[in-house]
Image 1 (cartoon, helix red, strand yellow):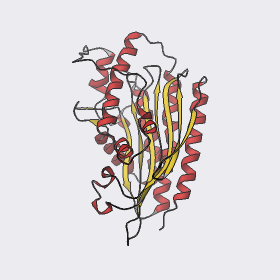
Image 2 (cartoon, helix red, strand yellow):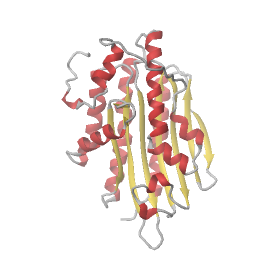
Image 3 (cartoon, helix red, strand yellow):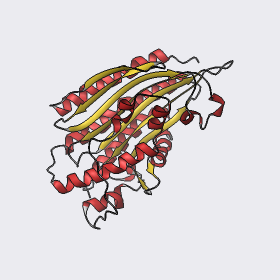
Image 4 (cartoon, one colour):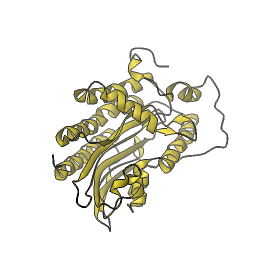
Length: 310
C-alpha cells in the first residue's frame, strides 16, 4: 500500500493546533508564540512556544516536515541499506515544563519517515509515544497516565500496550545514572506492518490520547502549594532530563545530524536546571521516594488508583 504523506501532514498540523489551543486555555495567562521556519536543504516547520505562563514555565509544540538527499547516520545505524537514500520526515514533538514542582514534565511525539532508495520501493515507518517525568510522585497520576495509554493501544491488540510500555522503560533510561528518566508511558519506532492505514490509525490514537493523559494531572496539581525546597529539587531533577536529551535522545541526534533547526531541536530543554556535585537525598523524604518507589519501571496498571497516595 502506497503511503499517503499528505494525509499524515494534514493530521499533524491539526494535532499541533488542537494541543496548543487546549494548553493555552489550561494555562489561562500565556499563549503560544508561532515561529515558521524554512530549512535550506528542504522543508521547514512551525515552532510554537509558551513561556512564563501561570501554569507552564516553558513548553513547545513543534511541527516539522523536512527532507534531504541522504539519511543522517542516526537514522541508518540500524538500516545501513538506506545510507545515501533521499528521505523526508514529518512529525509533531512537544515538551511541557510546568512551574509547579508537583506537576510533572511531559513529552510526546508522533512522526513519519519515508526513504526512497534508488531502484527500490519506498521504505517507510511510523514512530512516537509519550512519557511522564514527575518530580514528586502520586500513584493516582501514574495509574491514570498508563491507563490512558493502554486504552489508546487496546484497539490494535491486547499485547500492544505491554510491548510499547516496556520499550519506553528501556528507551528512557539514563544509563550513566542507572535510573529511568520518569515513569514511562509508550515508545515505538520502525512501525510498518505493511498496512499503512492501520499504522497511521495507531499513530493518531497515540497523538490523540496525549491530552486526555496529561490534562487531568495538570488540573489536579498546578495549584498545590510549594516552597523553595520543592523548587530546588525540581531544578536538580531537570538536570537529569537535560542529560538524557543531549546524550541519548534519537530525535535530538537526528535533528542535529541532519542539519535541523537548532532552536527548534533544543526547544525541549527546560528554562532552568541545576547540577549539584554528589547530592545526597535523605531517606524517608518525598524526594527520596521519587527514586526509591516511582522511578523503578513499575507495572502501574497493577497499582490501585483507589489507594491513598504514598
